[in-house]
Image 1 (cartoon, rainbow, N blue to C red):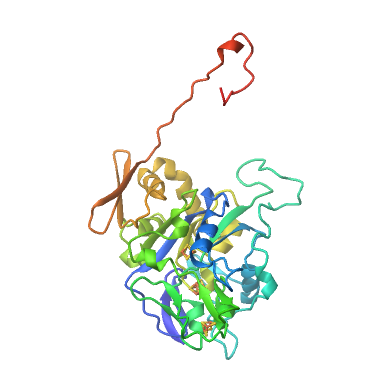
Image 2 (cartoon, helix red, strand yellow):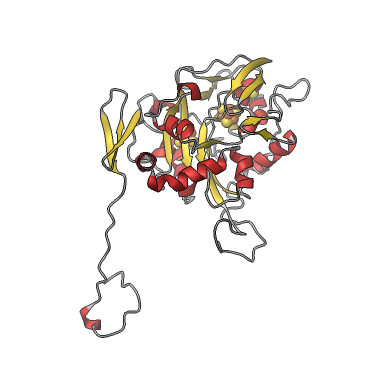
Length: 381
Ligand code: SF4
Ligand code: SF4
Ligand code: F3S
């Protein structure tokens, strides 16, 4: 095993090979607070990439309701139970990763889903916690009943378990953008990758007998465009971007600003040790004990920064730029109430107001009812 530095863990860790970092790293940011689980992203991905034979069950992008939703069933709770105690000492992870906890003779601690585990992608959808008697959020800060939507794609990890596990070296991480791909001509269907990926984002095709996974929409990335799941998102909660390591963070770059400067977007289960490159703004209404296990020790700080965005024009401006353009933003700036996005040549791509104008609609009471008491808004008059 080689020693590599995982900045999300604040320490070195063991990994099966040296794993040099790519020239730049594809990343996505998801604001969980804005998702309505409309599944537009899921369908956009499916109709673009997985409409063929053997791909029927595949959802490279899926949206699941936490805490009871899974695709495949039990994907996260199973690996968390196998891993045992996961303790943080401040911002340093003190437990073992899936590489360090690998059983003798294996490279990664993993498990294999049964075929039926993939059959219920909407399991637990819209089911809140609690005993079923409380169906609303009674008061702040945390209710007895809560749920939220988790947007899931391949994390295009810095230390991918799928790459580490494949005996054929059929999976590789592209040096130019860090996107992780399965070489379909090398793959022999061993499915070690399916067992190893703790996020369960490699999927076996029963027709072609080889594995497949989210390709980070690389044909779009190569043209400077954001992914399909980003551009169709109704909630404008996704951002496709590139992320630096913390020591090279540039506050003018959108992902660096959110992840390293404001620390508002956090990785999914960082304790597993893969340094995943999809980052989440955690839900503000969910008990921090739950989200801390999922997103690591920075959750309260991220929530405070997010709730403070109304008084932080730079952060608010960048959040307003989500979904404002199909092109990948290189840098951004906020001036005089306007948020601007720029390309790599420094040319403006798009600009949006940091605060949308508020229009108060006049109460338009129909003249034939003049004199009658008003009982409500008459939307169609
Ligand atoms: Fe590989 Fe899974 Fe990481 Fe994607 S999420 S790069 S499939 S280990
Ligand atoms: Fe699908 Fe592209 Fe999104 Fe990956 S990045 S989930 S391939 S739409
Ligand atoms: Fe390797 Fe997975 Fe194919 S382990 S051989 S990429 S099925």
